[in-house]
Image (cartoon, rainbow, N blue to C red; front, side):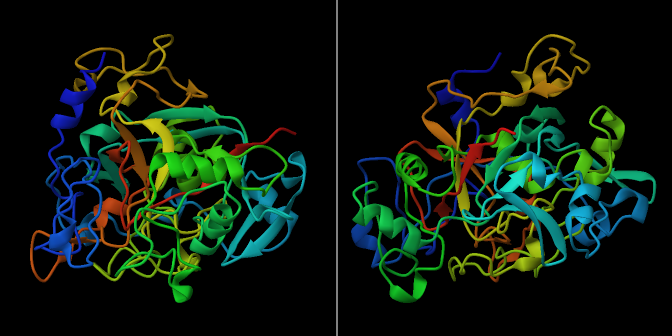
Amino acid sequence: MFASIPSVLASWAPAERARSTSATCFLLVGSALLLAAACQNEEADTNTGATDTVDVPDADDVMPVLPSEQVPAWPACEGAACCLARGLDCATAPGFACVTSDGRAFCQHESSGEVLVPEGAFWRGCRGVVQVGGADVPESCHPDEQPAHRVVLGAFAIDETEVTAAQYRTCVEAGGCTKPINTAGNLGTYDPLEKRQRPINFITPAQAEDWCRWDPKGPNPKRLCTEAEWEKAARGGCAAVGCDDGDRACCERRSPPYPWGWSRDDAAANAHIYGEGPTEVGSYPGGRSIYGALDLAGNVEEWVADDYASDVYCMGPAASCIDVCDRCSGQPAYADPWADPAPLHVGAPARVLRGGGFDVGKSVDSFPPEPNEDTVRVSVRNWGQNDAWGSRISVRCCRSVSP
């Protein structure tokens, strides 16, 4: 149903989401052509795919805080009762307990620090509209985020934060990992002592996988998150936003575009300071997701397990299809819900990146940079070549959880 991978990638010319730290420095990642000498110790990010966006009004006009009945209720609260009210029964997963931090109650593993994402449905992708005061207004979407649909996943645990440089260094010293491509420079975090609580960066997908396999935290083997798991951890499931798993309309209406809710919040993510690099993990507690994960928007992008295909959301099971759309060339788009999608492995030369980075909140097409808040929405999909690395590329891991 989808075009050959080279043509898929060719259709996304590197533009808005491909950026470097210097207009005079260009580094072609994943190729024999490395113009590193011209960089003068200024790192460049990976050459990543870009998509066209819908022309919408100013973000302040289209993304205000919605009426209370349409907004996930995340009041400050404490204790197991609060977790249960948000669809989180920590007792169902060994080693997890209900904790409260930054106004969120969530299930956290007592030794590993991972947070629990319960089984159930969630809303994936970008609708193209949001409801404001009962009326539909445009929402900026990239074509590869559509069609939006429900997905059902089993329970899993995800790291609370991205992997730090200090943590990754222990893996290198133990022989389980290799050093990042760039260890210092302006933006590298591996070597500088003062940066070791920042996310590790300049790692390839293979290095990210090596870390997850080696990481000793947790009782079960760890792995890269699937793309679906990553988005559910960032957005929240149907139960988390007060809907039954079977209530498609409710889940669609209430699922927020940001980890912290419906409205933009410059204080919730490191995505507004072009060129200054990653901050220490957990520096933006206001961006904590409903399941307790931090830094899922901004700071650094994260490798996931899936190959990149622009029309992957048109590749769902054919049974019980309920939607037909132009995005899928008139073909049934997906089954509702799409149950436990496996990571996409189609031999593509590119891997999915999720979460935006420290430099994506501003456009580099103008000086001074203009706001570009769209890029930290939870449904935004980016990609890098299979051997790509960059200053805003890192990793966090997942593992399956059984009762």
